[in-house]
Picture 1 (cartoon, rainbow, N blue to C red):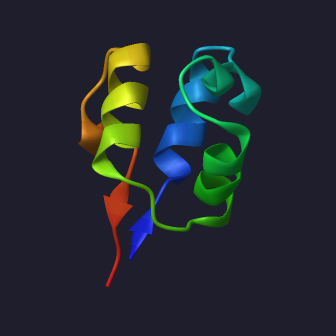
Picture 2 (cartoon, helix red, strand yellow):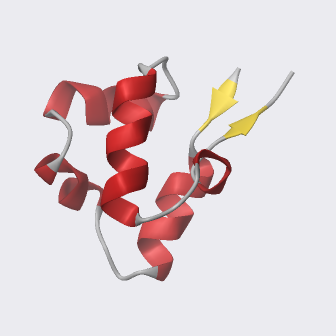
Length: 63
């Protein structure tokens, strides 16, 4: 299972809000991330490009 708490921590450290991600992803996709649900790799790529980071900076695999 993927956890996205790193994404929200990164946003906080950059004085950004979750809603800032709406520039690159849709509201339903943001809701999925907030609930820890699955998203496509395209979404992850958009977020990484927007935040200039790597996937490991925004998510973690938990057994």
